[in-house]
Image (cartoon, rainbow, N blue to C red; front, side):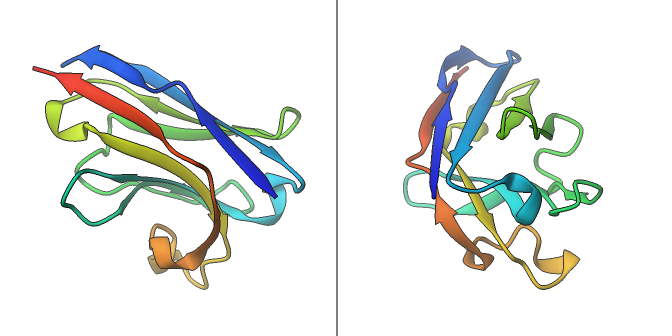
Length: 125
């Protein structure tokens, strides 16, 4: 099982980035998928999560309307489109797969078993 993120970088506030997460060794269709982030000194938080069927998604209020998770099953790749970026979005972003037991835990990082190495996003003001 391997997850490899890409697409991070430096962007000005108000700009956009699209992160990618390529999977190997398994298919996303069998797992819930989550994008999480961790800023220095802060707890890891879920920012966009999708159930295994692809029909349920969860976004916290901090990113709702700005971030969108999607997946391409043919490419076994998941994306995180981030628009209207803010300096407070600066963090290392990780994709992960797991088996959350309920919708309420879809973005709970402790429910995820396999993680990528992370990609850094820096938003300048």
